[in-house]
Length: 226
Image (tube, rainbow, N blue to C red):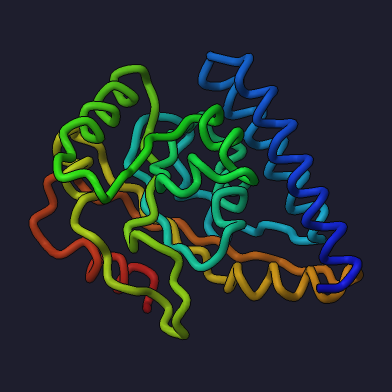
Protein backbone atom coordinates (compact mmCIF):
# COMPACT_ATOMS: atom_id res chain seq x y z
CA UNK A 1 0.00 0.00 0.00
CA UNK A 2 1.37 3.42 -0.97
CA UNK A 3 1.72 6.34 1.42
CA UNK A 4 -1.06 8.12 -0.46
CA UNK A 5 -3.39 5.13 -0.04
CA UNK A 6 -2.61 4.98 3.69
CA UNK A 7 -3.39 8.69 4.07
CA UNK A 8 -6.67 8.22 2.20
CA UNK A 9 -7.65 5.30 4.44
CA UNK A 10 -6.89 7.29 7.60
CA UNK A 11 -8.83 10.29 6.32
CA UNK A 12 -11.77 8.08 5.38
CA UNK A 13 -11.71 6.56 8.88
CA UNK A 14 -11.71 10.05 10.42
CA UNK A 15 -14.54 11.26 8.19
CA UNK A 16 -16.69 8.18 8.75
CA UNK A 17 -16.41 8.25 12.52
CA UNK A 18 -16.64 12.02 12.97
CA UNK A 19 -19.80 12.15 10.88
CA UNK A 20 -21.07 9.06 12.68
CA UNK A 21 -20.92 11.05 15.93
CA UNK A 22 -22.60 14.10 14.35
CA UNK A 23 -25.40 11.93 12.97
CA UNK A 24 -26.00 10.41 16.40
CA UNK A 25 -27.14 13.83 17.62
CA UNK A 26 -29.63 14.42 14.78
CA UNK A 27 -33.14 12.99 14.40
CA UNK A 28 -34.82 15.04 11.66
CA UNK A 29 -34.65 13.22 8.32
CA UNK A 30 -33.59 16.17 6.19
CA UNK A 31 -30.96 17.12 8.78
CA UNK A 32 -29.56 13.60 8.49
CA UNK A 33 -29.69 13.90 4.70
CA UNK A 34 -27.69 17.15 4.86
CA UNK A 35 -25.01 15.55 7.04
CA UNK A 36 -24.83 12.46 4.86
CA UNK A 37 -24.44 14.66 1.79
CA UNK A 38 -21.70 16.68 3.47
CA UNK A 39 -19.88 13.45 4.32
CA UNK A 40 -20.31 12.08 0.78
CA UNK A 41 -19.03 15.26 -0.84
CA UNK A 42 -16.00 15.37 1.45
CA UNK A 43 -15.20 11.72 0.76
CA UNK A 44 -15.46 12.05 -3.02
CA UNK A 45 -13.56 15.36 -3.01
CA UNK A 46 -10.68 13.62 -1.24
CA UNK A 47 -10.66 11.07 -4.06
CA UNK A 48 -10.81 13.82 -6.72
CA UNK A 49 -13.99 12.22 -8.05
CA UNK A 50 -17.01 14.13 -9.35
CA UNK A 51 -20.55 12.83 -9.82
CA UNK A 52 -22.33 13.62 -13.07
CA UNK A 53 -26.03 12.73 -13.40
CA UNK A 54 -26.78 12.06 -17.05
CA UNK A 55 -30.51 12.76 -16.83
CA UNK A 56 -31.33 14.97 -13.85
CA UNK A 57 -34.86 15.54 -15.17
CA UNK A 58 -35.77 12.00 -14.10
CA UNK A 59 -34.94 12.56 -10.43
CA UNK A 60 -38.12 13.08 -8.36
CA UNK A 61 -37.90 16.17 -6.15
CA UNK A 62 -39.78 14.54 -3.29
CA UNK A 63 -41.75 11.45 -2.31
CA UNK A 64 -40.97 7.99 -0.98
CA UNK A 65 -39.46 5.25 -3.08
CA UNK A 66 -37.62 1.97 -3.05
CA UNK A 67 -34.38 3.16 -4.62
CA UNK A 68 -32.54 0.26 -6.29
CA UNK A 69 -28.97 0.69 -7.46
CA UNK A 70 -26.21 -1.50 -8.84
CA UNK A 71 -23.22 -2.10 -6.58
CA UNK A 72 -19.59 -2.42 -7.63
CA UNK A 73 -17.71 -0.46 -4.97
CA UNK A 74 -17.73 0.76 -1.36
CA UNK A 75 -18.11 4.37 -2.55
CA UNK A 76 -21.53 3.65 -4.10
CA UNK A 77 -23.54 5.05 -1.13
CA UNK A 78 -21.72 8.43 -1.24
CA UNK A 79 -22.18 8.50 -5.03
CA UNK A 80 -25.94 8.02 -4.66
CA UNK A 81 -26.15 10.64 -1.89
CA UNK A 82 -24.51 13.21 -4.17
CA UNK A 83 -26.65 12.21 -7.15
CA UNK A 84 -29.78 12.91 -5.05
CA UNK A 85 -28.48 16.14 -3.52
CA UNK A 86 -31.11 18.40 -5.15
CA UNK A 87 -34.09 16.28 -4.09
CA UNK A 88 -35.79 15.93 -0.72
CA UNK A 89 -35.60 12.14 -0.87
CA UNK A 90 -34.13 10.67 2.30
CA UNK A 91 -33.64 6.93 2.45
CA UNK A 92 -32.57 4.45 5.08
CA UNK A 93 -29.95 2.06 3.75
CA UNK A 94 -30.42 -1.69 3.92
CA UNK A 95 -27.08 -2.71 5.44
CA UNK A 96 -25.39 -6.04 6.08
CA UNK A 97 -24.60 -7.17 9.62
CA UNK A 98 -20.89 -6.96 8.83
CA UNK A 99 -21.15 -3.19 8.36
CA UNK A 100 -22.98 -2.74 11.68
CA UNK A 101 -20.11 -4.44 13.49
CA UNK A 102 -17.30 -2.89 11.46
CA UNK A 103 -14.79 -0.72 13.37
CA UNK A 104 -14.46 1.34 10.20
CA UNK A 105 -18.11 1.84 9.19
CA UNK A 106 -20.10 0.73 12.24
CA UNK A 107 -20.62 4.07 14.00
CA UNK A 108 -21.63 5.80 10.79
CA UNK A 109 -23.94 3.03 9.55
CA UNK A 110 -25.77 2.73 12.87
CA UNK A 111 -26.43 6.49 13.11
CA UNK A 112 -26.85 7.55 9.47
CA UNK A 113 -30.18 5.80 8.99
CA UNK A 114 -30.03 2.12 8.16
CA UNK A 115 -31.80 -1.19 8.62
CA UNK A 116 -29.82 -4.27 9.53
CA UNK A 117 -30.14 -7.22 7.18
CA UNK A 118 -29.00 -10.39 8.92
CA UNK A 119 -29.24 -13.27 6.46
CA UNK A 120 -28.34 -15.76 9.18
CA UNK A 121 -31.70 -15.24 10.86
CA UNK A 122 -34.30 -17.83 9.96
CA UNK A 123 -37.12 -15.27 10.27
CA UNK A 124 -37.15 -11.98 8.38
CA UNK A 125 -40.26 -10.57 10.08
CA UNK A 126 -38.21 -8.16 12.20
CA UNK A 127 -36.45 -6.79 9.13
CA UNK A 128 -39.70 -6.15 7.26
CA UNK A 129 -41.22 -4.57 10.38
CA UNK A 130 -38.29 -2.13 10.47
CA UNK A 131 -38.74 -1.20 6.82
CA UNK A 132 -42.44 -0.56 7.43
CA UNK A 133 -41.60 1.63 10.45
CA UNK A 134 -39.07 3.65 8.42
CA UNK A 135 -41.56 4.23 5.60
CA UNK A 136 -44.26 5.25 8.08
CA UNK A 137 -41.83 7.85 9.48
CA UNK A 138 -41.34 9.33 5.99
CA UNK A 139 -38.23 7.58 4.69
CA UNK A 140 -37.53 5.93 1.40
CA UNK A 141 -35.59 2.66 1.34
CA UNK A 142 -32.22 2.46 -0.43
CA UNK A 143 -31.08 -1.01 -1.44
CA UNK A 144 -28.56 -2.81 -3.63
CA UNK A 145 -30.77 -5.55 -5.09
CA UNK A 146 -27.75 -7.63 -6.16
CA UNK A 147 -27.29 -8.27 -2.44
CA UNK A 148 -23.51 -7.90 -2.51
CA UNK A 149 -20.79 -6.10 -4.42
CA UNK A 150 -20.45 -7.18 -8.03
CA UNK A 151 -16.84 -8.33 -8.34
CA UNK A 152 -17.28 -9.79 -11.82
CA UNK A 153 -16.68 -8.13 -15.18
CA UNK A 154 -20.41 -8.29 -15.90
CA UNK A 155 -22.42 -5.06 -15.72
CA UNK A 156 -24.83 -6.67 -13.25
CA UNK A 157 -25.24 -9.82 -11.20
CA UNK A 158 -28.56 -11.48 -10.39
CA UNK A 159 -31.01 -9.56 -8.20
CA UNK A 160 -32.20 -11.09 -4.93
CA UNK A 161 -35.98 -11.28 -4.61
CA UNK A 162 -36.28 -9.60 -1.17
CA UNK A 163 -36.39 -6.07 -2.56
CA UNK A 164 -39.71 -6.77 -4.28
CA UNK A 165 -41.28 -7.74 -0.96
CA UNK A 166 -40.23 -4.37 0.50
CA UNK A 167 -41.88 -2.54 -2.41
CA UNK A 168 -45.07 -4.58 -2.16
CA UNK A 169 -45.44 -4.45 1.62
CA UNK A 170 -44.97 -0.67 1.67
CA UNK A 171 -46.51 0.19 -1.71
CA UNK A 172 -43.34 2.02 -2.70
CA UNK A 173 -42.73 2.93 -6.33
CA UNK A 174 -39.34 1.62 -7.46
CA UNK A 175 -36.77 4.22 -8.54
CA UNK A 176 -33.99 2.53 -10.57
CA UNK A 177 -30.49 4.02 -10.54
CA UNK A 178 -27.46 2.81 -12.48
CA UNK A 179 -23.91 3.91 -11.69
CA UNK A 180 -22.38 3.66 -15.16
CA UNK A 181 -18.79 4.23 -14.06
CA UNK A 182 -17.06 1.27 -12.43
CA UNK A 183 -16.90 2.69 -8.91
CA UNK A 184 -14.38 0.16 -7.59
CA UNK A 185 -11.98 1.02 -10.41
CA UNK A 186 -12.54 4.72 -9.73
CA UNK A 187 -11.50 4.14 -6.12
CA UNK A 188 -8.47 2.09 -7.15
CA UNK A 189 -7.34 4.73 -9.63
CA UNK A 190 -7.73 7.47 -7.00
CA UNK A 191 -5.61 5.55 -4.50
CA UNK A 192 -2.87 5.04 -7.09
CA UNK A 193 -2.77 8.59 -8.46
CA UNK A 194 -3.68 11.51 -6.19
CA UNK A 195 -3.64 13.97 -9.11
CA UNK A 196 -6.07 12.06 -11.28
CA UNK A 197 -9.50 13.69 -11.69
CA UNK A 198 -12.36 11.32 -12.44
CA UNK A 199 -16.03 11.75 -13.33
CA UNK A 200 -18.56 9.18 -12.12
CA UNK A 201 -21.60 8.94 -14.38
CA UNK A 202 -24.98 8.09 -12.84
CA UNK A 203 -28.23 7.48 -14.68
CA UNK A 204 -31.80 7.42 -13.35
CA UNK A 205 -34.53 5.26 -14.84
CA UNK A 206 -38.28 5.61 -15.08
CA UNK A 207 -40.36 4.75 -12.03
CA UNK A 208 -41.64 1.18 -11.80
CA UNK A 209 -44.92 0.49 -9.98
CA UNK A 210 -44.61 -1.51 -6.77
CA UNK A 211 -46.94 -4.21 -8.10
CA UNK A 212 -45.23 -4.61 -11.48
CA UNK A 213 -45.74 -8.22 -12.58
CA UNK A 214 -42.81 -8.47 -14.97
CA UNK A 215 -39.27 -9.36 -13.93
CA UNK A 216 -37.75 -6.20 -12.40
CA UNK A 217 -34.20 -7.27 -13.18
CA UNK A 218 -35.07 -7.60 -16.88
CA UNK A 219 -36.84 -4.22 -16.85
CA UNK A 220 -33.76 -2.69 -15.19
CA UNK A 221 -31.44 -4.19 -17.83
CA UNK A 222 -33.57 -2.92 -20.71
CA UNK A 223 -33.93 0.51 -19.11
CA UNK A 224 -30.16 0.98 -18.95
CA UNK A 225 -29.30 -1.04 -22.09
CA UNK A 226 -27.29 -3.62 -20.17
